Image 1 (spheres, rainbow, N blue to C red):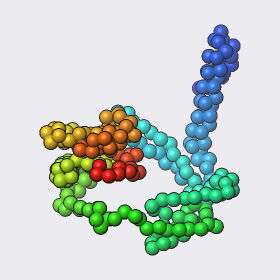
Image 2: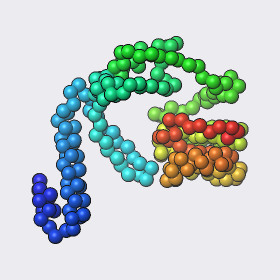
Image 3: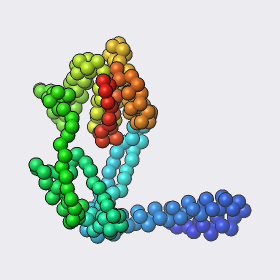
Image 4: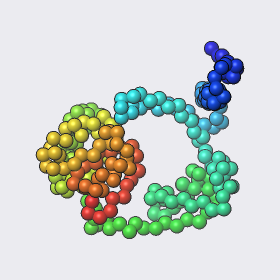
Length: 233
């Protein structure tokens, strides 16, 4: 069913400002309808289409209609490389193998470029420890046991570091369970609780953690991208 609301809006007794707002809303709806139709008919040549279903931290279900070109090289050459004098790409994960950028260059259609790979200044031998917990239950077969074991492991290592820890979760469901089960123990030991599911802004959470690192920050999503907390914290 379709009705041309813009004509009704313009002929009403609304103020000029109200009419402009409503006509603008109509235009946005038209644009959205066109995008939805393009997605439904799969108008993107050599593209891949999919749907993503997720639940927000407040329990709201979100469905996203996604589309992307299989080859992004032509788009990048037209809209980026050809429009700037210099383009600098940096990341810790661009090279594959020992020092090759060829795979990444092919993926983004980059034919002429200079490359440089630098080592990390971080002293992993002295400043890092990798711990692999054995005999964990398979989360696909027994999620409850796996989550319970994970929470006990978190408690063990947080106690050793006296807080100063991030717990990065793959879902808000586990994040909420970990916070619920560990909060009494953390409070008993004088450790603060910072939870991304609390609704507090990510930047504010990080600031609170830096001010009082004797605690645990439970995060997901954006915290996986990495943060920089220097010093003893």
